[in-house]
Length: 42
Image 1 (cartoon, rainbow, N blue to C red):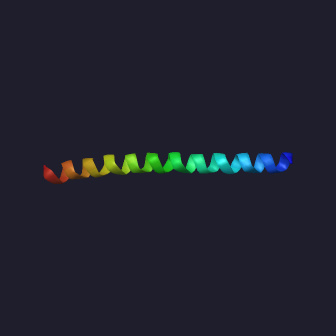
Image 2: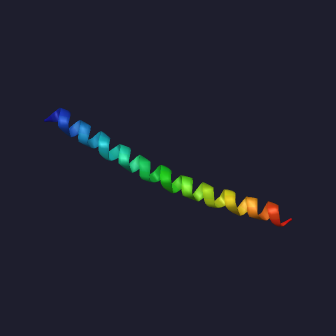
C-alpha cells in the first residue's frame, strides 16, 4: 500500500512538472518570437 501511494505521488509530481515545463516553454517561445520579429523589422 505504501509503495502504491509513493508511486502514485511520483506520477502526480511528474505530470505537474510537465505542465509547468510546457507553460515555461510556451512563454519562452512567445518571447523568442517577439524578439525575432523586432530584429526582422529593424
